Image 1 (cartoon, one colour):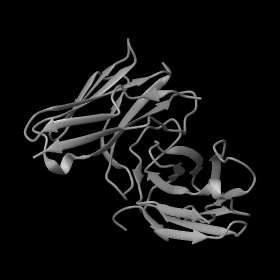
Image 2 (tube, chains in turn purple, red):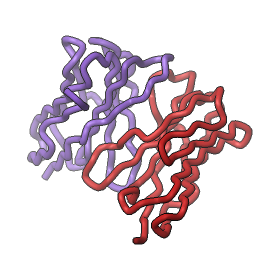
Image 3 (tube, rainbow over the protein chains, first blue to last red):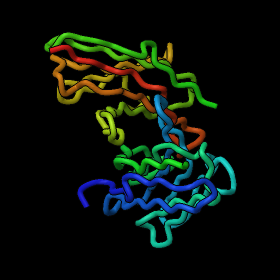
Length: 116
Length: 113
């Protein structure tokens, strides 16, 4: 596609439920990032994929959060036993390369997750 | 954690004037910087980037200046238009982490018609 696509755009879930957020990166981009943005704040890093592997998951807040990218393209961020504090906009970004090769990262529109 | 901060949380400018948005970063190991524009309800939009081996880079109506001595970054927008109204973030990428972009809290730019 022309840009990074994230689905759904909005998700409301009950506390304790499981949610999956999907990211379709720009075609050909090997690097994929997940960020989380709370109201009035800048995005905070969660996890970075280079190809299929999670090269850096140091930003995941706890073991309720997990992400996969099985074929090196689409990625899914999974949150178990959701809590109200998980409410935020979850952003996905992709770039042509990652790691020590610096190339611009392009963001999707985000998924607004609300845990009630 | 990293500290990427902006000097002014809000900025109002008259349409047609030039805008300058400032950003201070704390990690001298950062070697790549990006400015993003974020409109309400949308994801951050790439504006311009700069590598640490440069001190200035120009795009269409935008210029980014990097002063590594004082760890300062600025975004200059020429002839500001109402469509430029948004929150602007600077993001830094430290060489030693390799992967993470660190964002500041943002500056809200309002263009007065």
